[in-house]
Image (cartoon, rainbow over all chains, first blue to last red; front, side, top):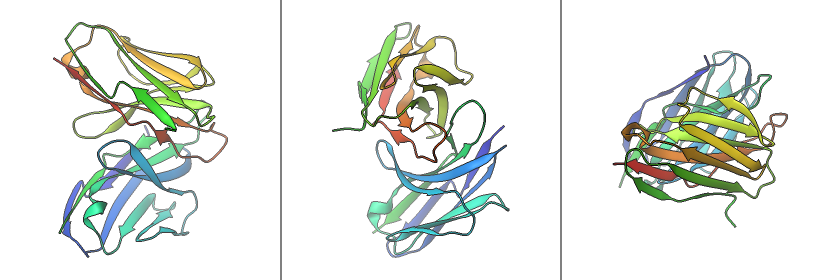
Length: 113
Length: 114
């Protein structure tokens, strides 16, 4: 069964800190890995990673994938209170039936002023 | 101009009732999904439809029945609601599996069964 594990499950930091969120996965046939940010409502898309070693960057957020070791990290530098959210990692297996986004349990990040 | 919209946003109902949640996407996507997010915030897939055809049907009680009248709509009907059905239900859509694509989520429907 396809599985996604995230760590830590919960993290409290102060503004200005740098955080690293981890995502490891087991999937039969890997297609892509995605990061989402969920504040109060819908998860919003951050990054899609398909190739190892290529960093994706958006402002203070960056992410990288290691397909050999089956993990990804999401880095947030100079955190702000607006970064407080649940960060979800999802993998997309490639199978004959259709497309599914298999989510991990999420990391709840709290950034204190 | 919401890309994926679902209604209602909140639903409070008594045990044993039947209720429906509607979802529509205007992104031209072929694939639509229903996810359930429990109190621990775990997002778990329930159903996936591609062009009105059921593709994924996870282990979900048969009280839950999705209906896709066309590829832009995927509704969820729930019969004989139980307390354990209380959760947030998210509709999502994506391009077909031949493309590397992200899923776009609706705002969620918070269902409370009392």
